[in-house]
Image 1 (cartoon, rainbow, N blue to C red):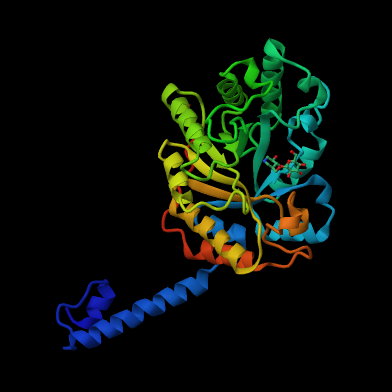
Image 2 (image 1 turned 90 degrees about the vertical axis):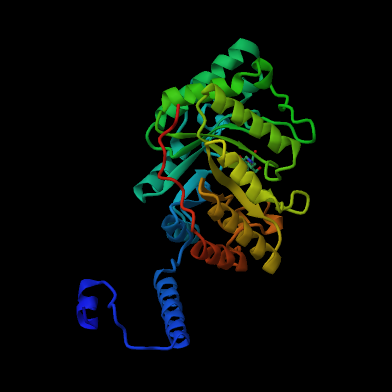
Length: 362
Ligand code: 9MR
């Protein structure tokens, strides 16, 4: 076979023109380097959502229905993000302000905006000790348990087929070193309230991923992290339907990004659940903030089952902690250094795509 026929057949020629090993190596390296440069510059995505999608992931933001008339806000949302979480509109006080009287108007505005543009929706949240309507705050015992289950069923049924992942239960563990459940009216209905909520959610919307979501569960050594881990492990062992764990990841000086964050992500994932970074914000500015965003993204991309990141707002001025300027866009909607680091990390990473979305397991 001569060189021409080898090229035509796609197989190497058996006799190549003599060339020193060094020259071959240099030429080979140059070709590889060119290919890398060409392929990365040719394919580098220019938005967070597009880049995450290339890695089989989503990049989302918490949004507010009353900002959907702000053109700067919506412009960034539609350009950059491929998932949304209603920041407040799906909470219990918003969706069931009076018992058995449901109100979905504001949540629908967000869901419709997202779905018509092909964005995913993270539902937040079906059962929580906080932001309960007055009628629920005043309930206890069996009546509260039944009201909670009715709420989960009605809301998850209403949105059936539209929600990618539900935060079924939010923030049910106590802070500090006890590893105990947080005391609340829901907890006082019995320790099984969390699994009861998950079973009701699965029955109402079998296609949605069901998540447990909490904060200060980022550091692998923290008692709260370990307690949530043991609950998820127990649920998986007993067949309680759970598909994902949400790490809120609100980082600041009191709750800094932990160096073992990747261990936390991979340890939860090893239980057979997806891991989602659900409320990311990092207080600070400049290089320090940008490099922390970069590390968070790198950690998620390194863990195959870390399948999405959501930042808790769009511009700093939209943040619940606006004084900490914790987001990716400044008050005017300009990209910050943190944005550039995030996009670079998304574009650079991704050797470990998530498994193809598994249907809920139980
Ligand atoms: O960002 C939300 C803010 O607008 C609300 O006033 C607040 C009320 O509880 O909830 C904020 O969102 C929280 C989320 O629902 C759960 N994790 C903590 C978030 C920040 O407080």
